[in-house]
Each structure stands twice: as C-alpha cells, then as structure tokens.
Length: 116
Image 1 (cartoon, rainbow, N blue to C red):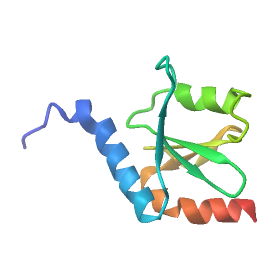
Image 2 (spheres, helix red, strand yellow):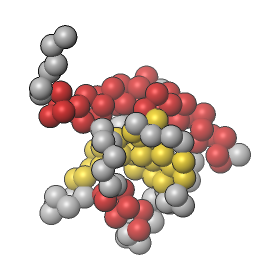
Image 3 (cartoon, one colour):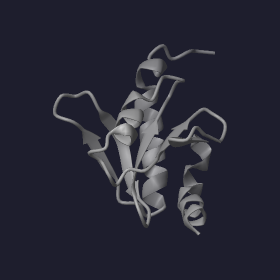
C-alpha cells in the first residue's frame, strides 16, 4: 500500500471542500471571513432565523481559537453560538456545538428543531 505523504498537508482543505459541498447541497449560501490582522479566520457562515452562525471545520483536534474569539466578542451581536465540524462526537460546551463531518447534511434540520 502506497501512503500519500502530502495528505496531512492538504487534509484541512479537503475536509473544508467536502463540508462546503454538503452545505451548498443543503442550499446554504456560504461566506468566508478573515479579519484584517489575520488573527481570525472562519471557514463558513450560515444563518438561522435569529443569528449568524460561524462554522469551523477541523481536520485535527486543534483548538478553535477563531470560533471562540467570534463568539466571545461583543462586537458581533448576531453571533450567539457556533458549530465545529470534525472527527468528533456530538457535544455542546456552552459556546458551540461539535458535530462529526458526516452530520453536515443534518444541520438544516438540527437548526430548525433547535429554534422550535
């Protein structure tokens, strides 16, 4: 079996593309954000009825620094919580929901039921 040594270099972009494709198929209009200083970068934003929701796609178990900064910053009043997609179990830490990649297709239903 031949192992691709470059996979770890590109796997973040691969996961972002796969998640982005799933979100587009769920008819989300996607937005990307990077602040002027380059200290905050967010992969995607979607909206529910009441808020702007940052989505961070993680290919490893790294910290979600940008997601935490956006949620904690009082300047962004529309952001009440976020979503982290990764190779993780389902969870909520009071700031953001963590979901495995394969549940991306379920986001629209999850957000609708969350509001009801």
